[in-house]
Image (cartoon, rainbow, N blue to C red; front, side, top):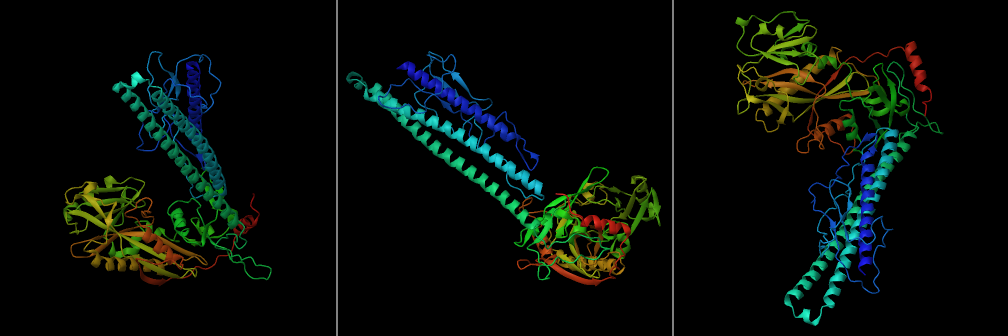
Length: 631
């Protein structure tokens, strides 16, 4: 009967509306989730769908059917909504920009004869998308928070998947009913009507359309099953990664072979021993990201590529008066590598590095390798001033703030008399004139060499090894060079532009740059500017800036102690992974490592530091470090 069919259509549409409403609510829950304390932000006004997916409307409609004896109506309807008794067939229209609502079909409107299921997505129903993936955790709390967030995400995805499958099943059920109705209508055609070719063609077209829509609905249901299964499997995999990470952290913090970190003035604590009096051996080698910045986390990531390295979790160490937090390995233990040198057997910062980093100090070490340099301090010339304007050539002059890098404080002027006017009264500057006859690129642009250096100081505090990288980068100015164009785009070369390996002058320039760096480092070591660390390895990867003239001579300008380094995930085509992996294979050798393109450039010896007698403050600090750590 028509009344029963109308009730079924209305109630099924209302059931679909409830499913969509629940799905949108679930999508809002997913939007509010956070992973490791970092909130995920995306709009709930328009549910997210995969990029590039089609947004055709998914509209479920039905025609008046003929009741099939003995055929059960799929999906028994929910209790009827108020005012629905005796109403015409309702259509569930899923709109992209608002929650789906039952849309009433006008009484005189003819319902479509087929179910529209040719949309690849269901508008108004949240898409099955994983918004949070596992990322490496550096503390126990971060690992716990991430595991909870990933587990919650899995539950939300499961609910979304159930709702999407229910909607697809509803589409499939309507398509099955439409096929049954079309076939029954064709069977009941009378003898007279069967002679009407137009009428027969209409019935045949209806059957074909219904079968086509049934096939599409069935395929959409199968695809939805696969999509839901795929995303849930991925979510389960991310949860498993998180679980394994927490298991690993539990294992490493139970390693009894680790000792407390002590100050350099105190003797290195002896390793714990086993029941037989033998020193305990670490199960793995450990690295800790103490969030100091620089390249510390990057080096940790490269160490963790090795099978015998594990993360040792960090903890809060202390806060300063400005509220800045400092971190250390859990329990203030001494680990194999940490970016906080006090807690690391391998320090990633050289002691005395200021003699290489500060532009005024490196002048003492560089000598004639550096172009003639003048100094402005507190708005005045310190030492000898530059010559008068009429005594110099027309090459431009550079005024560079002594304690800043990246070209952020470089000023260019035409004459030395203009230099003082470019300096701030409370800062220190180095002033240099452009070298004569610079070697330019083939298209006339200015360039300089980014020359990479690895310096390694050994545990005896006296021995140093220097390595230079056989490859490097050219930094090239955007504009063609002219001595009369004072713009930064013409005179200042900052950004690494291209690898240097294919540059023809590199073959002759490389050994000269290598010898110049070795000369500076030897002076720094033998003069005691660079200091050894007793019982601790120290290293640093840094760069030197060189410029070449048309005679093939090289001039050094400065060292950059925190150079730009790119990882494959940031720059897949041109990156520094080979440089970093090779350097770390020298610092901490292992069976799968290789120095790669690093070239040994010399060994130097300095005076080892004398052990300092512990002060009262050191004794107090040691006692505090030995105290059990809360929690």
